[in-house]
Amino acid sequence: MIDLHAHLLPEMDDGPEYLDAALAMARRAVEDGTRTVVCTPHRSARHRIEPARVHEAVAALQRALDEAGVRLRVLPGLEIAISELPGMDDEELRLATLGGGGRWLLVEMPFRGWPIELPDVLRDLEMRGFGTVIAHPERAASVQTAPDRLRDLVGRGALLQLTAGSLAGELGPAPLRAGLALARAGLAHLIASDMHGVSWRPPGLSDGVAATAAALGVRAADLSWAVREGPALIVAGERAEPPRPKIVSRTPRPDAPPAAPAPRRAPRRSPRAPR
Ligand SMILES: [Fe+2]
Image (cartoon, rainbow, N blue to C red; front, side, top):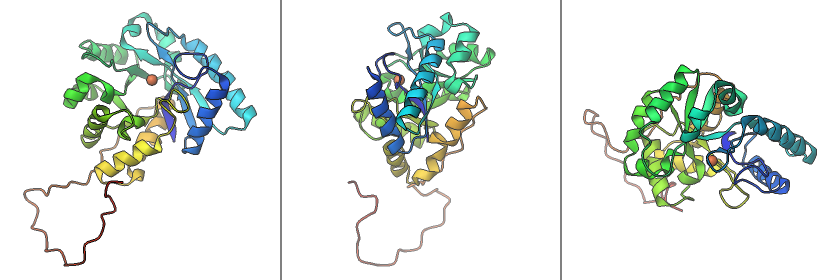
């Protein structure tokens, strides 16, 4: 899997303080099946990280991973607050693209308030040749109360990145509810960890993928685009169009023929009974 959103660079933002902690996070990610991590430190008023510094830090972390025998590829990126975008020129934005692919930018969804300027921001970025991945909308209060308001942004070409921990229920009931509502609406385009530490906001995508698949009634493999094919296109700077979701409907269509009566048999435990 490819993890598109991670605070893995040591001594950079609110991610790991030391290299040892970053290596421990990287090992955990590899154990969970991640082979590539895009390092996306914050670009915000609090952490004004320069994209060129991220490229240097990623190269240093890759050397440390190789020396430690951790089989993980790290790539550069940035998680950009909306308020920082107007102050960044095209060259800075190009350096800040996910994976250095030159096309996709990770834009942070604010936790409070609906950003009314976001449609204009997306249009401006598109005119400058960039696509937008919106980071963790399910954690924003404005989306939790009305997930459907994201449809306009998706219609303008944005991709949504949901956080694995939200979908696994590790970040509380509101992100879980909003995340699964987006997934049922076919809007769980990408799933990433947003890892910050070994135990707090930890690495790992598979629990979030498994929980989403269970909620949709599909196999985890059916969500592969969100953690493999989609992220691969994004880090390569390619166009990325999510597949239509395969969702098992629990309510029959009104024009569907009546179901045959089920054969009588002894009751058994549902394989999807809550654990
Ligand atoms: Fe983040």
